[in-house]
Structures are given as C-alpha cells and as structure tokens.
Amino acid sequence: MTDHDRAERALARALREHDRDHDFAPLDPEGLKHGTAVADPPRRRGPWMGLVAAALVLVLAVPFGASLLSSMFNAGSSAPSFEARPANAPAAGGAAPIDQAAGGPEAAGKPASADDRPAPRPGWRWESMLDAAVQVPVDWGHDFAPGSDWCAEPGYQRPSAPFVDRNPLGRATRNILCDATVPNELRQTHLTWRRVQPGDTDNAVEADPAGEWLRVNRVVGSAYLTVEVPAEQIDLADEILGSAELFAYDPRGCRTFSPTGLPDLGAVADLATASEVVVCQYGGPERPNLVGSYALTGEQAQGVLDAVLAAPEATDPPHPTCADTGNWLVLRFDGTREVRLNMDACSAFVLDDGVTRRTPTRATCGDLLVGPLWLATLDEATDVCRPVR
Image (cartoon, rainbow, N blue to C red):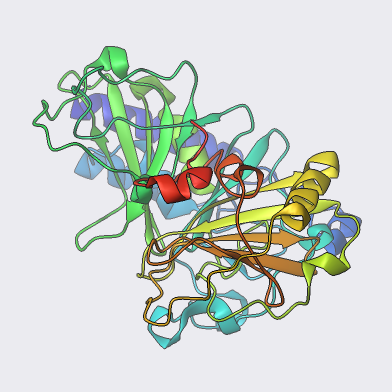
C-alpha cells in the first residue's frame, strides 16, 4: 500500500465522516437513567474537523491512514460515564485524569450495580485491560496472538475466527529465535494489548512487507491497544479503538487495581442464591493490573456460588512473609459479597471472603480461568487452577 493510497483512503474517510456530522443518535432518557443509552460509536465532531484533517492528510501524506483520523476526531461516548472517560481525555467538568501515582482509582467511587453499568452498543461487548476498556464484536472469541516463539514445535495454530488475546501479560514465551514476521497464512484479525512504553503513539503500521495486514495502535491510559486486521478492514480497527474508554472500575464492576487486605463485605455463606458472579483477574505488582473480566448469570452464577460454599475449609495459615505480587482472582456475587484468591505462588492458594478461608477446587479456580483470563507456570500443588484452553 503506497503513501498515496493511504492518503486517498484517509481523505475519503474524512469526507464521509464530515457528511455525517449533522446526524447525532438520540439518547433515550430512560436509558440514561439505567446506563444503557449508548449511541453508535463515539464520533461527535464539529463540521469543520473532517475537512481540516483531510487537508492535513493530503499535505503531509501521513502514512498512518484513517486510524489517526479516528483518534483525532474521537470525543468520547455520549453514554453516561459511570467512572469512565474517553481515552486520554480529562474527566467531565474539567476534573483531572486518574492520578496513578497518588494511588489510582481505588478512591474514585464504588463499582456500579448491574443496572447502572455502561452498556456496549448492540452486537458488541466490553473487553477490559489495565485501566482501559474497549468494545469488540460480540461474536469474537478469545485465543492467543502469535508470540516471538510462533515457529516453535508444534507451530502456531491459526485461530479460526477473530479473537481477543488472552491475558498477554500472563503467558510464558519459549526462548527460541523465530523470524520477526509471522507468515500471513497464520494471521487472524485480533485485539491484543500490553503496558504503555515510552515512545508509544497512536499509529498504523504494516504488519508484513507487502502491506496486506496492518497493526493499528492506540494509547489508552496505561494500555497500548493493537488491532491487527487485513489492510482493507482498517475501518473495523478504527471502530474498535474509537470505543476505548478509561475506567476506575471496569464496565463489569472490577476495580482496575488489585485488592489489598481482606474482603469486608461479609461471609459468602450468608448468600443462598446468586444471580450474577463477576470474575476479575489481576496480574503483576505494577498498577493498574486488571488483565480481564467476565460475568456469569443465572444457573452458571448459582453453580459458582454452590462450588465456593462446598469447598473445604483451608487448614494452612497464611504465610507471614509472602509479599503481595498483585496476582489475584476475585469473585463478586451480586455486588454484595466478594471472594478473593491470591495466586502469588508463595503459599497455598486460598479462597478468602474475609470470614472463612477455603481450599480452591477445580470449579472455583481453573474452570473460571476462561475467556480473556489466563495463568501460566503452575506446579502440581496448584493444578486445580490450571486454566481452560
């Protein structure tokens, strides 16, 4: 793809966006009250912005294509924020962004109830990482993006459908030298992420020498998001990254920093039923460290509660010298009870609700490490927490 092609694509996209500037999706007042009113992707723009950006693209022939235009234009969602903000923008009313150095978002409020959480647009779902969340098509799965060891036996197996990468921070990579460029026949459309590093910018780069695949990148708070797509699907990458927001508590109610101390919501044994369980995973000492979340409802949520209550009480006392490494699995039942599992590998894994300490079972640990969650390097003693592939 030549610079001229990219500039032409960007100009056409900017003009299309300018043509739509006067169309704003109406918000449903009832939806605002319940946190479900979400217009189509957050693209409110002034009528002159498209033409200015288009002119800049033509003059500069920016080699990043339309993805940079989306980043320049994006002004956040028209939905209620619920502790959320458009990526890299100050909070409403001129409030300062989350101050990570001052302890982060733990003091920024409480997680929203299920009725008050920001809803994704129809046909899409939220994916969370660190202090960011982004929407992807609901039919995307979860799998593993190729790593630097993609050529190691038995070789990287191309996923059959688009996917979100499973906890990229929690995977082991074999020390083997593979070609830096993954063959195109192994590529699949996907979203991956890592922590922001100095010099990271919003851009689009060619993933292969022929320019048939692109990696579209965006800085969102502490996360560096990458959507890899065929070059002709750059609009999809822009749409995904344009939905990104910063959160103190993610759209499912998981705080973006791992917990400290013991839960203080009360004994989970006080619950006879559960209509929802939200599963949050945290990884590493650097904060924010939320690596993913998902929710189960109905019979599945009740099954997890029953499994926790059936788990045997732990007999080993907490290890007095174990430091908090930030590796936690947190289960929140209906927002009223919380069970935490510290997976720091310093002492035996224990489920703790602040009242009773229980020994984890397959149903209360490994079977819950699904979807975006993943945990590597376990020994036999913690085999019940081995993730589901």
